[in-house]
Length: 160
Image (cartoon, rainbow, N blue to C red; front, top):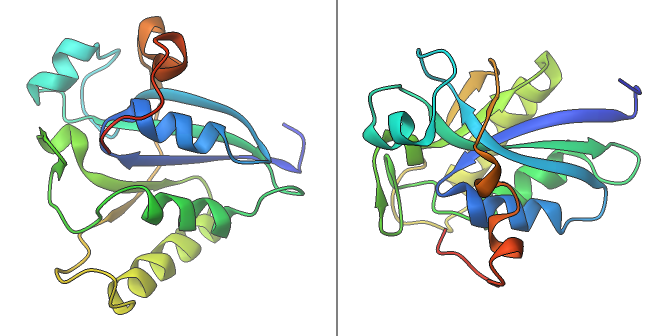
């Protein structure tokens, strides 16, 4: 991979809206909806939604670090969801909707941990930030109909 192109992976609830928001950011080259952080190999949407696979719905972002920084991606992550609701985003409830940052390097881990602390100290939310920071594992891309879901279905927004 080009040394200026990097990966970042975020779980912030329903991946449809999360993907659309990251995809719209200048410097993001690709955003892929998928599953990460569970114990089942090759999970499908049904397994993830049942909560039995242990995976989170995530968006993996391939980005040009010359155009957008990892810190900017972290800022967007905290802007587009509520990091204080454990295993829930809006009407979506379950561990697959947890707030999680999967890091791909030591530098990302340090930045993510600091971003969680900063978010917690910001005074923006009344409740404690529950975002987890974990090492990235295998991304299992979601089924094709989930990719660019809002765009394909002519929708502008998704509750996230």
